[in-house]
Image (tube, rainbow, N blue to C red; front, side, top):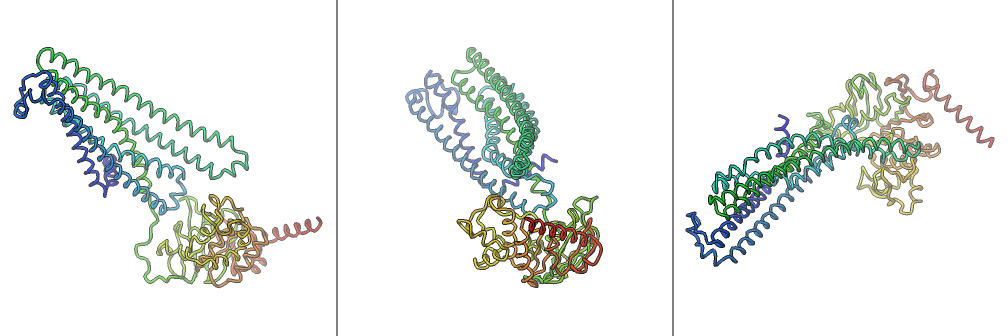
Length: 603
């Protein structure tokens, strides 16, 4: 059943280009037909043109005489050259058609893979290794392309040569044909065994290459952390382990290939040697003429070598099936699903009323992060969330953006059940600054206008000023056209966060989420941004997550989380009067600030 699925998958990938493959096969058929004519002409030339032997075959005697052949030897030579050249032309045409079809198929496959990766669930991405996904989208796709470009046609070529050559050989001389094909079952059987072995070997090698790519990708992504902790030697050791495993499995694959090529070559030479030895004996006994032996021996070569090459073709088929299986694992992975019956008449812009009612969620089945969580936020209000690490603050943001769906309870926005709204629509209503802001390797202008490409430069500069990043951008030589490095690495942590805040502000959504967006910003800059947010109060419902209480104190409501539960909620003044985590943190932070001010004054 698994094999049937694999071949069906390969057949599906060829959809839309099967006609082009059909044309390639037609060109291949013409080339094979021309190739099979040449040995006949050579044999006829030797026996009847050079040796003057009487023509015994009626079909040939009705066309030409030995004298005609002898007088037109130069014409036969030209005919052989012309037929060979014509076969080469059709072979080239077949290659062009197959290559164009394979390139188009692979282009579509890459597009499909990339689109699928954009819509896979966050749970899938949480468990998958980025390097392995890159491997599937590059190396595995290339393996598929190589097979579709060359080996599909090679399978047909070998099969056609075998099916055509066998009847011709038995037609020429059935006794010699039996001798000339006695080793053929061994060659075919050995190729099939090799096909089985190479699949498992290639799969192990391909997975090892994926693990190696993942190790390299992780190291390069975190190269600054590696250097900061002087872990180069440790990372090198981990890479060496993966590299050695990849080399060992690659070497095993080459060993399998070497055994196949040496044994199959030996079997082929035995087959051709038997044909030549017994053919010479038949010639000596007067059973067949010399020219017919030459024709016979050429046909044996035409038949046996492609069959021997079938082992390589089958190995490429095995590799392609493994690659397609790994690709299909991505294509068949669950994608984000929307409810089948979304509410009708959704407005272009919501008001931003939020409500969590008895929400429970866990990344793992037996470990809930949020427990029966409930709170509300009115349109235009600022809701602050405080809590220790692991209390579920960022999980609330992920649920609000529908990266995950709650296991129990209801999340509402303007009274709509979030789980019934299209994910794209939900995210179009929320401007988010994530805990780890991500910038693309583009200009600052492109990064700022990521969610609103049509925004005028005046609006872009306005939000950059509001996020206290405009002056820093103007100091760059190219200003807003300055290219940032991968993941924004050429900017400081604070600059990246401020650019991300400006990007969210430029979107002007009814709901704005700031998930620890001030962690890398100094207190003075933070105060400037918070004051701007206070001035624009009422334009958007704002969820503010931070560890500095000075950032949260002006919120309309503050909720305190502990182990996924709301332990306190109220305004800043109300929470200060209530004994609990908020009061303790306030005293700790204010005491630290007072000590710092005294030390600065003493200096």
